[in-house]
Image 1 (tube, rainbow, N blue to C red):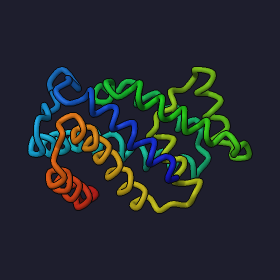
Image 2 (cartoon, rainbow, N blue to C red):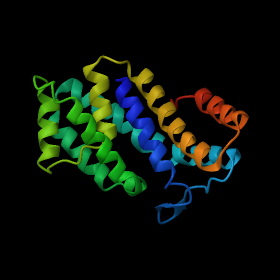
Image 3 (cartoon, helix red, strand yellow):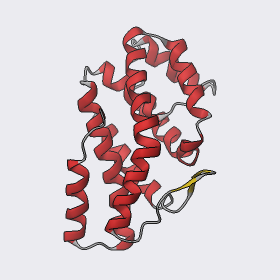
Image 4 (cartoon, rainbow, N blue to C red):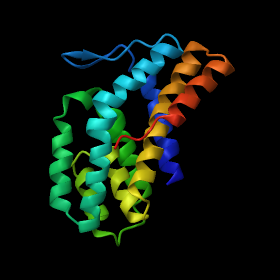
Length: 189
């Protein structure tokens, strides 16, 4: 599980080099990040338009589907995410992370839903979104949903922050300020 969080953090770090200032949907842009305050505004936008309405519910739903061994419903959710305009710009990175995690879980062949989902992704019949793989992992390892969601939210935002910190060369106090705010952000109810 810790490997997944490390991969997620690295993914967001790489995405952070590209995301700020880019269009998410025709009607909305992310805040351009040039200091800690603009980064915190970017984080709020990301949470409002991507994390809270799309990623966290997808994780919860994937975990529920895994608990019921509902593979068909998982495929439908996978397909639905593919048409979601707010995550289009994150698609390639998400699929790369999801596929990497599925590869790392290949030893769990006896878990039917995971094995079939992985096969469908490899055959090109499913996308393999990282949020769905994360939800499946939460179920497989009996990680409480709220704990998993809180860790996910923190890792995503810290990954973006690490990217901004390096590219903008924040001081230690600037990094500490942002990291403190991120770690204190409440999980949406």
